[in-house]
Image 1: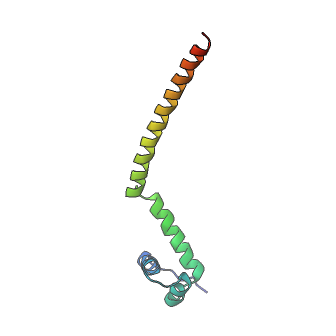
Image 2 (image 1 turned 60 degrees about the horizontal axis):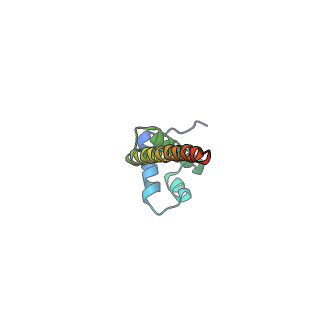
Length: 93
């Protein structure tokens, strides 16, 4: 028995139906005449491909936020190092 092959367009349409309808993944798979595991694999594959594609706006915002937080934490660490050194000197007098 030959394995059926589906176009990228069919796969994307199946995933669009899955994401935009109130149907369960089992119902969508049954309606389209494909296996539940096949639809699950397509969903996983497309999500991975989407994550690995060009940066997303949310990722850019998160990266910017993390860089600011990192700079703030470094500044606080440096201040604490200076304060520790200052109080260590004061304690030796």
